[in-house]
Image (cartoon, rainbow, N blue to C red; front, side, top):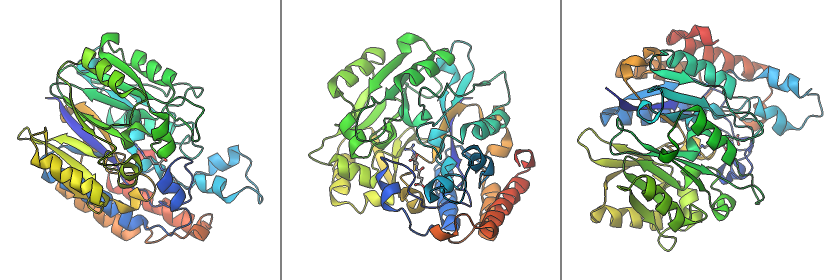
Length: 415
Ligand code: SUG
């Protein structure tokens, strides 16, 4: 029985605001703020619990080992090395598992297995250190080779940001789908992180039918406004695409190409006159989890920040009063992640699979959520000030906290 399972990244004990992501406005504007790793991780568990309560299967991926001293060695770090480069080794950015990999479910692929390709994340120095350790987790969680294939990341010449630039249209999750790859064209004010050739390589590696793939270019104006990933301005679920009117460089052409491959497409578009790109990016209305509930209705899980924006909430209310496919809008508090540019959708990787084929140590239930909360409450630093980054005592606490988590989950082999 194939289900959509959301694998959320558990927020790591080194969560901090170092302002590392050029083009990510939240990351830049919170640079230097104190962070609250314990609260951040508990907010993430709260979101997972909420989704489980809706009847949705829930999994998680674990924080990577930080600080990553090997990374600092590779750049020959010395006393004069800028603080931001050093801070990269302390980043908890693997929490945003929408960037962990691109996933093609079994019904879409030539060999009938679910294919996963970790994203190389090469555009940002602090994120390029993630993929090998992420792959080590995917190799365990999806070890069953009868059901899953886990690839290496595509070569670093082509930036790949994973599922954040990928959407899937289908009549229901377990049926054959059309996969939409959204890439950026370089040359704008901010980096275009997803290279077209990375998307095309992933589609080939996964054995997708070319007739079931659509390649679409992001709107450079959206990237310039702060949409460093497509999932900041668009999200799809089953037959529905929920998108800002300025998400793609050629919006009518994009819909036409999607409709040619998937005629049942239903577009829920938000016009710029209702919600500007700037407001969409500030509130992360589109960085939402668009999910199908067990009764078949669709719900949109949005950041709390959406409710605080007059224009966004007015649009949400008018949408709910209409007759569209999205029947519920559920705000969640992930403010610590939001302040670094990660909303509810950034925090999860969608995998359509039989939960019984997944290593159960990566699947959440109530008892395990209690366990995660108690480890986090006991070991995660309450607060990290930017001046603490680099201190050995903090490094020790962060390492011990992660090891306590691995131990509690019987995943000590990832140490
Ligand atoms: O890559 N922020 C992440 C946010 C990723 C959001 N993911 C999706 N849209 N799917 C990024 O920019 C902040 C790091 C810092 O400033 O400390 C950061 O990496």
